[in-house]
Amino acid sequence: MKIQDIGIIDLIQKDAYRPDLWEGKNVIADKIQLYTDGCWVSEYNQKIVGYLISYPGNYNKPSPHNKISKIISNQSDCYFIHDIAVDSKKRDCGVGASLIKKAFQIAESQKFSVITLIAVQNTIFNSGVSYGFKKIENNSLESNKIIKSYGKDAVYMERKLISIN
Image 1 (cartoon, helix red, strand yellow):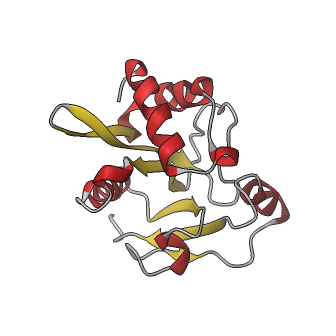
Image 2: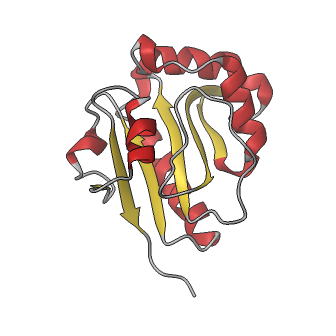
């Protein structure tokens, strides 16, 4: 993913999400610059059809919605999928699955034992059956406030990864 991709990423997010979940182009640019190794696009016929933004995070303090990020902490204790979206015309083509699998590989290569995300819009992640994600119970007050920034239907989820020593 490159800064030049922001225009198409913005169009894909607007196709995938309701307006209160759209993030500003400046926020998208910030996330790309924050951790380029965790930001990817998926292409079909040389056209971007999906993207994923991810980075090391703090399990008890997930990244807020539509906010400029701070520097990644040396004490990151999880790998956070901030955003994933696929063009509506390509949603049944495995684009999302390939992006998620790449996030798993990066997280494992960085020796994280858990990957987290905040599911929105009652997506398949909310059911806890897709890709092994499960709802995180007993969140701290601070993380609950952050989760609510993603909307009333937002659910904080985790997937344990294979332990790498």
